[in-house]
Image 1 (cartoon, rainbow, N blue to C red):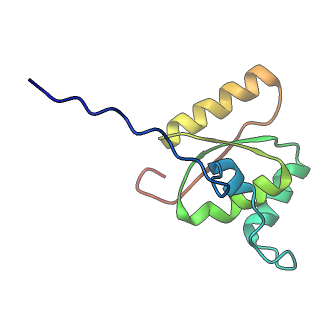
Image 2 (image 1 turned 90 degrees about the vertical axis):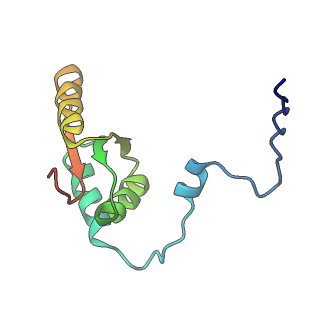
Length: 107
């Protein structure tokens, strides 16, 4: 007969934060502007409100800038999915569909 172990109840502490809280926390020097922040500012000025992306280390600064600029980030698992999602978004909303992907074999 197999033994059953009851799942442990999640513990909560005052320092528990969500991933979104962690991403929104300002940890950089506000006097320094990265290239990624400049990209996000340019996207925002062109009317982009959502990016479809494949996450990677090369574009983390763009994500930081998008969070600061209020641009929504939709992460997908393949470059083609990002392109099709951005296309569908543009067709349905009439807004710009924007793809941001990292460097890799599929790009």
